[in-house]
Image 1 (tube, rainbow, N blue to C red):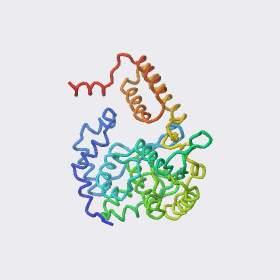
Image 2: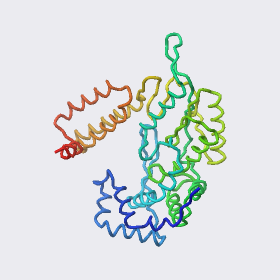
Image 3: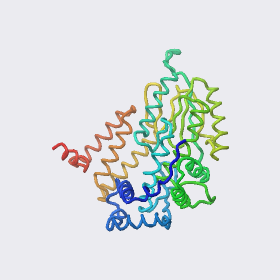
Length: 366
């Protein structure tokens, strides 16, 4: 395995910190904390660089809030200058660590994402089932799926295990010091355990940590049709017994190697013909639908944005972005009538409105 040393100077370079600042401000240029940081941008970046070089850098306490969307989650938000450091760190170590990731890890990676994961699932489904057979006049797809979820993943990540995994590749002690500082900033009842939801570093470290599971499933168990999105994963196979064997082996591996466990209620084996709940969609043999709770959640968000628009506390750009994101997510699902109805209602309500994105597109075409 190739290892990397002497990375810290690149991490602390002004060019890397400036790039990290631009990444951290993306889609947040109007936020007050961004404009405050920009008032003396060069001085702020130079101060951050000095703190990193002298090892006097200490992150600000995380701001925590509860998000119910739809399940209750505790989100921890870092100060903007700390987010700059997170990007600066990932800019340097991500290319070194990601080269070990499997192809079928889809979360928080360029060129991947939920839609790519769903398309890959469908590809696996076709390969496992091979073809469709007719039983009593109804079409029935062959094969089974193990749909699994790691129980309370972000709350149970062991810091020492994570640091050991990273240190196999990253041999720079100063970079490892910074990673320890970032991990320790998340205060929990049990020291040395857990990562905050909402941090860039947490998303990346989740892939680093669970890549151990990916390697075990692909190379030790030799499961061909496996894919993972954060802490959710699926394995497809024609044999239910093979999947039961995989499930037992994975449970043992998670417990003994990563101090994790499968969620007992969300880790099950069932026939593919029933349809699989995966990343907000229900995937059947010939079609996909959006889960009802996801539709309800989107309609609630849209209703809230429309209410704020009527009150004058939100502009059309936010509604346009919400509708655009929904259309992109649902374009491969069989929701044409629902989508058409929502867009028709939006067109009637916001007739004559034009978003900043639409203006920019028109200017580019001029």
